[in-house]
Length: 447
Image (cartoon, rainbow, N blue to C red; front, side):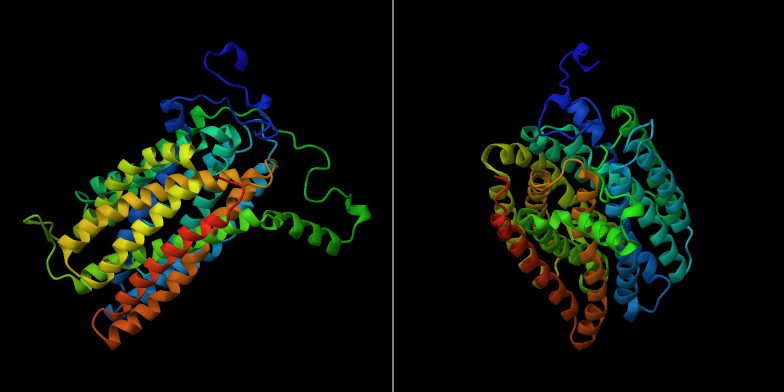
């Protein structure tokens, strides 16, 4: 029992905890790292894909169509991701497995993700890449939809800033690890295989650390309490839809969702097109007198600069968010990211890009730490934590559809004038980040 373990807190006594806690809270660095380790694998996977798969796509399509083709791949995957995390979260909220609510989904999703990565590494046509990307997106949603509820499940509210900061640190350290993996491995298949192995290892760590009791959902607490014999199909569908959209009745949840949407829109405008931008607009990849070589290396080093600075900022920002409030940290981060993205859009010089990447990383690391804690603060229902966090995660997936469509505009703008498409995309990104961070002041249910 929890009471017999030293330094352990039984969350069932905490009124802010879930109905049936998925483990025992421990305020220790090792425990925080353990419960967040699959975010390390997830961040590593998507960071490598978003930097390298544009080059993989560009190798099989005509040069003038590469941004549009890559945007199509991302948009199709994002369409599924709009509902995937919330659906998987909803199912896990109601899972009565003896292994717990979250763990079965994490295990199955992690295994499928590894298979999808191996398939994608061997893709040799655009349609194979689209199929592999969709398979990967679905597999990832199976695991991360339920997994996203772990912090609200087991971490008390006054510790979530620290927990979110450590989670963000792992996500950024993963991006550093991605560079270390991808630089020496030139072949896409070898790179994706290494990512698949790390994905499985991190899932095993989470499954070992999280201890879940069997969960029995309270009678009548589901979305449709009326027996089928007493309600028509239409009534049941209406009730189900109302339950599904219930988080949006909260003004705070709506603002948190919308501001995350804006910032994610800005982030993906940069991440999706920076590799092709470096290919088309930057003549030499030299920084501090050193030549980094290929465009692949240049993209990875720029990502490394963001990740190093973000990792250094994330945990201090999380602690600061616990002390002075999440919103102040997010607003500061927004101004800093805006200030770095404007010159980034206008000056295609690699040394300048690396310097701006370091500053952007500080702002982005601070934003990641505070924004996750902000979201967990305003969840309207503890019973539906995974489903609601999955709906919040859709605020990250939805912009990918729009930013994917921007790829066609980038190609069109580049035909009008050299680099005009990229300039438009990156200036738009700056505006999205600023708006997203300033509007968090509308949230009333968090500090």
